[in-house]
Length: 404
Image 1 (cartoon, rainbow, N blue to C red):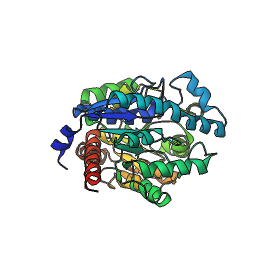
Image 2: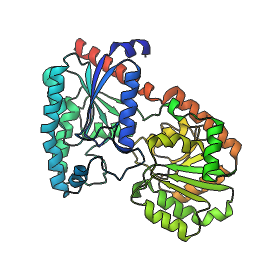
Image 3: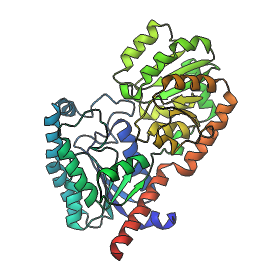
Image 4: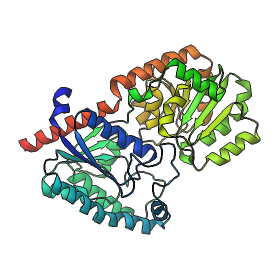
C-alpha cells in the first residue's frame, strides 16, 4: 500500500453511527476519527442525538446511559424497541441528507452498521457518494437482546450488505459467516481493532507510582479491563481462581471497570477475605486506563465473542502487558502463542486459571512477551494502520467502479 498517496488523497469523510458512543463503541469511534484527522482528513461525525462519543460517559462506564431518554428506550419490549430502531431511519435519513447537501465534496461515507438501518446506504447511492460500512453487529450472530423481528432484520441486512460499496469486518470468521448468509454482498476487508501506541506509553516512574498508590508492592499483577457483565466472565474467573490464590501469594489481581456483575463480585471477594489479593477499582475515566495498565504485569480476558475483536486485547498489548486470552479465531489472528501472549481453550476457565498462575511465576518471560506484544501493536495494530487500510480500500473500490 502506498500510504503516502492514500493519506493525502482523501479530504473529507462523514462518519455516521447509531450507538450511544460510550464504552468500547466510543473508543473505536474516536480511534478511527482521530486517526483519519491525524492524516489530514476532515471528518464530521453524525451521532445518535445526545450521544456525542467525545462527550459521553467514560469508557469504563458500560451501564450508564449517555442520555436519560436512552434508558427509557432500551427498556421497551423487544418488538417495540426494534420498531423504534426501524423508525430511526427517518431521523438518520433527514440528518444525513442535510449534511450531504451542505458537503457535496465528501469523498465517502463511513457508517458503523446497525440493525434495521438502511437510510444512509440508500441516500448515498442516490447521490452517487461511496459508502463503506463497518460491521460490528449482525442479525446472523447471537446477541444479548435476541431479535424479535429477525426475518425483517435479515432482509434489510441482506439489502444493505449488497448495496453498500464496501464492508469492513473485525475478523475473518465474521466476514465468512456474513458472506455465507448474504450471497452477493459487497466486497469486504478484515480489519481487527487497534490501539494508539502513544496513548498507552508510560514511564517507570508512573508504573511505580501507580503500584505504590494501589499497594501492589513487588507482587506480580494480573489485570482485567472492561465491563463486568456475564458474557465477559470476569466474575466466573475470580470464582474459579479464588481457592488457588492462597497457593500463589506472589500474585494479585487488579480488576478495572464496572457493570452488572461488579457488586456481586465485590461482595464475594469481601466474604472470602480476598481483598488483599483481588483489587477492584470500579468505574474509571478512560484517561485513567493507561496508568492502571502500567501497574499490570499480565492480563486476563476470560471470554470474548467468537467473532469479535476485543479492543482491550490491543490496549493490553500496546502497554506491554501480555494477555492470556481465549483461543477464538479472531484472537488467533492477532496473538502468536508464547510470542505476543498466550491462549487457552475458549470456555475452559480452569485452563485460564492454570495459565495465569503458571505464567505469573516467570516475571522475566512476562516482560519478554509484553515487549513483543507492544512491538506488534506499534507495527501492525494502531488506528493509523486501520485508517490507511480503509482509505486504500476506498481507492480500490473506486478504481473497480470506474473500470466496470
